[in-house]
Image (cartoon, rainbow, N blue to C red; front, side, top):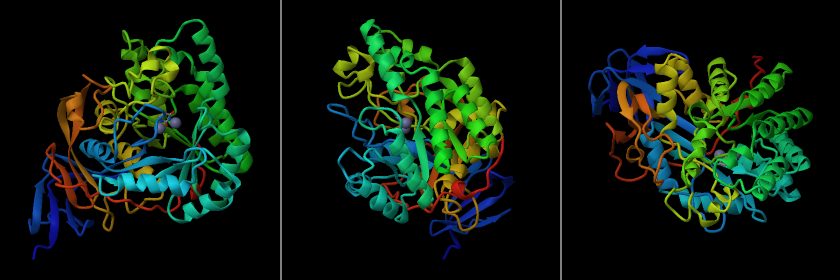
Length: 475
Ligand code: DUC
Ligand code: ZN
Ligand code: ZN
């Protein structure tokens, strides 16, 4: 009998700490050997000569099959979303389980598990979105769910149906404090957005680009400052998600300087898009409507600085896809009457890693090790998956992406295999591409082809976040 199920031969293994030329031996879904030469005694051998072997990407901020309002449908379910993720070099994704008002979290989870079960090409786990923090939820349901492995939740400071008052934010953060779960915050000031939106509409400025006008940097900066202050008052760590600009970044740095455990996430749209992308003719700008909106060159530079200097802990896609040529998507009829009705979010689950590899590693802004930390290892640490996931080490799950660091690719939507009908990154020239993706030892994508005959990803309950317990790092 072969010693291994699979050997990856001749590649260069990159982790958050090291770059090493070695073979990888896999048995029963785990990495069981790392050595200079493991021979060929395996049921399957993949020649990785000249390729890089990286921990599979973990995308800890995605939306799949999320209820999105009357008449609107998200473009990706668990099957298409995780398939696209695998094509983009990811082996695990963490979608949000959205609690609708009046619904219990258990009910919401039942729905998401039913949607995901048997349909995932990557592994999955769920964050919870808390929209209705009743006494029962705060006192019993949420603490019990943390025990059950749902160890992170997101709160919103905007959107009519989702936003929490400051009191409610404090109460949810307090459950984070008592349970050790990580609280993620969408930081935008709701009343300011509403005020600006109503004024823009009165002035007839309703085109997609005014989505960005209605959510200026001050809206995000103020909410980021308030979220951090509330976290300070409760004395709890928080993750500020989808940070888009220098002023919000400065709030995070200021919090850390005070010794607070504030963590930060940014996304590809803040590194390579700007608000002028929303200027497209007719409704084309709708393809770029997401929140916070892409900003300007100065904001992009600031986000790159945060990627380089460690201010950002994680880099996620915030994949939130709506089809463009679709009345249930970006061209929803009332979206033509005002930007406020355009479904909010953009696709990016497959393009997240190639964009950072090409713009970050190949252009010399970050090392390959930092790329691994930002795209995989820190996600595993932040969300209670490390060291099972997020690294290449003996005993870890065999979750691996094999990259061709020299391959040049022009991004086109047909490469992405998602359920959407466009990509905001169409035409972008990329150097470095994930060619093979292996999930717990099963090859899902091989040389750019889907080879897994059925989705074999599984749901993973999580431990508490390592970020919550780690000492404060002053930056
Ligand atoms: N926040 C997200 O995290 N994703 C999409 C839209 C939003 O507001
Ligand atoms: Zn958000
Ligand atoms: Zn999101």
